[in-house]
Length: 169
Image 1 (spheres, one colour):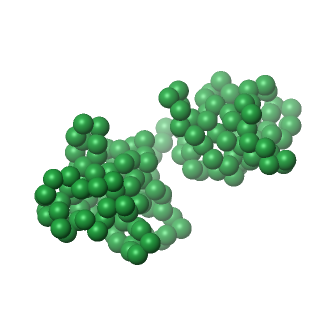
Image 2: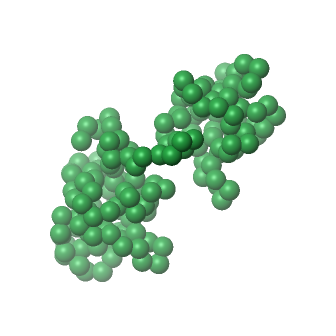
């Protein structure tokens, strides 16, 4: 896997039991797809970058538990605690029409229907109702836009066209 083509999908929060299971905090909306058995993932921290194969996956009380490379002893997996888990862009699940990976919208320019420039998508925030896109305008001011059909009229050619009057500062 090329490091430039990696997508963060989770972080190892700790171990679970003594049989080598890792507790994972997911950074993905596609949990079952990302962590299914047989998937190859990269474990990365300041000291290592290792490719591993997921050999088991289960949910336990809203926690993701995985084993890797059939390692079935806590002593074999403790070194992965704190690691970020990545997958390749090529492993991204297919999207339906009008669905987007939020990461792919970073850097898009945002305009209204009249062509007024609002800013560039800098980040996104998850809220209970969905996602907010964070824009940075020419004056380095931060603005938020709900990422819903009612506000986002069109997405194409590295541009978002939005409905006027729906920006939060």
